Image (cartoon, rainbow, N blue to C red; front, side, top):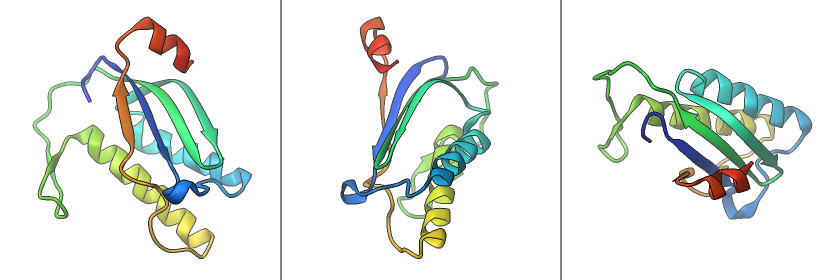
Length: 126
């Protein structure tokens, strides 16, 4: 994700199943989103539905950093914002799995993101 650019970030539950089971799950999701990502992004709009979510975000302009995080799963390096997204999703998934006595993946796959390249797409997201 590039600094200064808008993105449509979205994902859905594994097998199109719910990712929010009760009202407090929505609140917890937003709280974790803020905790992990507020240093890196500004949120312009969002929509949380029982089995999926959408965010319209803008990546903040941040001072240059050389911090890179290694992952053991795919031996890939993550930028700080990629690590923040990963940590956010892991934290939410662990909390839901524990609270609802479930195991396995909550989300269908890694979150999707599309760069918002024009005003028409930007407006339609809002």
